[in-house]
Image (cartoon, rainbow, N blue to C red; front, top):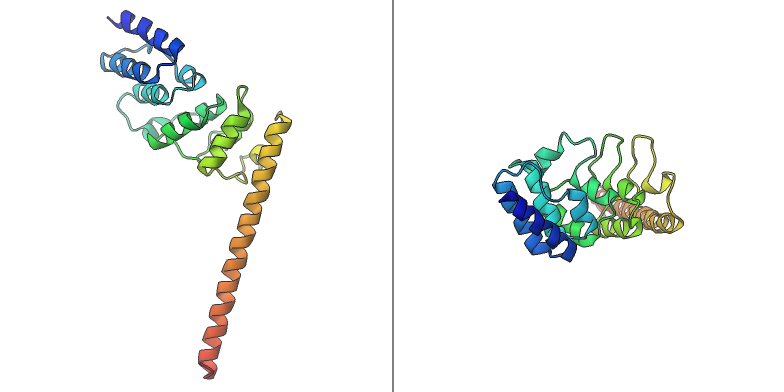
Length: 198
């Protein structure tokens, strides 16, 4: 019976029928299918968010996705999806399902944004999706490099990351100015109370 489902999953993948494919993956996993008819990377490459989550859950074999990722050297499902050039729908589905976090690190200290920047397929799409989801472009890996500081990036990816870094630095500067202004105002108010001016 599993073989028939595998053929149906293959057909659903080819047709990019996400709901059917996800349903069939879940059914295969429930029947104890050790060899899933589709890999996580295939689901991501096909742009099928429900299927990617179904495969991740099947691979986790009943564990919470965060627990299953704890021993994963690749950093987890979000890292793997980013490295495969996942689009915003797949990344959002994985985040909603509890698969990793935007600031989680793999064994090299890289975040999903680091993985997306070096993706072989659709890196710009994955980088933009992660940035839109709130990834920190200033996060550094163990080598002390931001996603933009890695080698082998396309010019378009470098440009997107450079703009994101600039915006993040400007945002941090504004926050510091606001914090400093609040501290100065508080100190002036306290000083005025102590001297009896207020």
